[in-house]
Length: 171
Length: 157
Ligand code: SF4
Ligand code: SF4
Image 1 (cartoon, rainbow over the protein chains, first blue to last red):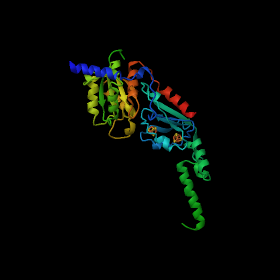
Image 2: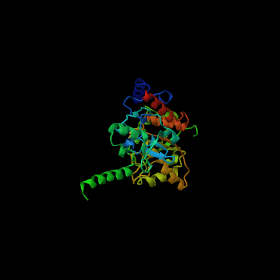
Image 3: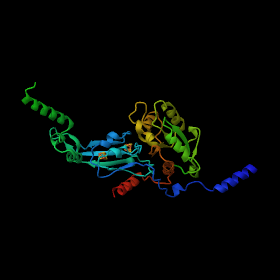
Image 4: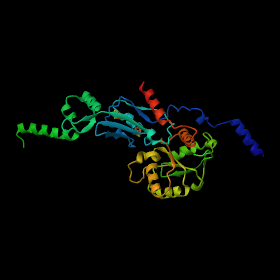
């Protein structure tokens, strides 16, 4: 009896602890790390797709290589922000969204569309127009290689080496 | 989902325990899901819904299938990135890769497809889990896409 009374007094002294959360909004604390969002500054370079440990990001060539889509799966993302670290355009921003629960998987996919760059030689899509022009602006001078897909680029490099050697009398 | 007490059975399918700790936190008096009648039960036979965490490792698979066979849940709350889509184990040879391949496999076994509520996060915070329960019970509407679009608009400025 005395034990119960003590417990009752302790409960009365403590008061109500339960948070009013689902009935009242509860903003996340500043330190909470939510899913990333991708701004229009994105150039579709694909650096984030390589950095992502969860494979939540992918760069897909769709509609017969007419459009390149950066796809982010919020369901699989672990909110580590490695994508924000590697992004050259600072196009990835952390958010503090946490009310992500849904019964519709399509709600958990973010998409950004880009126009593809086609290889000057073989015509295959190999990157996005914005990524190529951004890279050209940053390094410059080697556009002969930049406008070609990796395969044709290797052929181009080989032919340059071969033609420079012909004059030198080697091989 | 019927408007009555929701009894849940917790299945850890080989997760790291992060989601399970958050789930226990969400079941504490601070968040108190018993306000909505949510109770953890000890047997899958008693459960209306399963809370599934982990990427469904092959080692856990027989027990998981058995739990679904006897439990036949009406709904599954997929807790965390692993259960939602494989998480960082998505390309591992030792896991099935989350709820979707598991449900495909269960369908082959003749177990009906339950309703799936996905709660992303690594781990999801207790608030997120509570929101998932609210969505399951019909007290709240899913609003992930809306919130992300809003956050994107706010980040651009
Ligand atoms: S936050 Fe981490 S897991 Fe999510 S998309 Fe970025 S790199 Fe991938
Ligand atoms: S610009 Fe940033 S967000 Fe866009 S593809 Fe490159 S790394 Fe990813």
